[in-house]
Length: 103
Picture 1: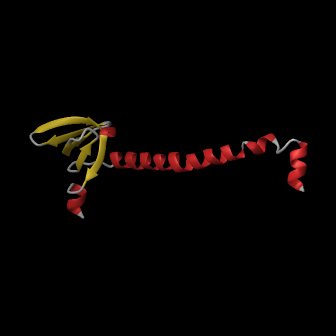
Picture 2: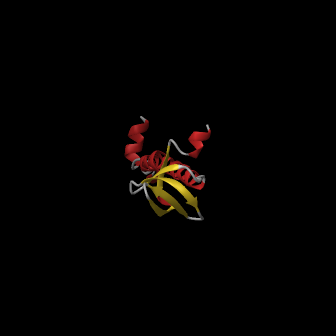
Picture 3: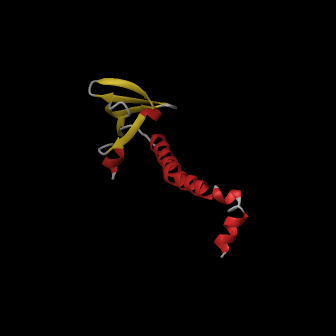
């Protein structure tokens, strides 16, 4: 009976028709943006904690040992070469660094 009355009076209220879209946007936000923000925060913490002796891999694929850390520049030794890399371009810390040797 109630559905017949809704059809006769013109249907649902306009804001109720947008409810599924709002629900989809909330789900999208939770599934995409929240994990991405968490990953960004972890990466910032990792780059902030870099220390001399850590083994790292850059986003470009260079593998090296940290020999110096300044404000936003990390100096790496890769074989015989020494290169300066922006701190944010460090992709990850690998095992075998100073932290792994201590523990």
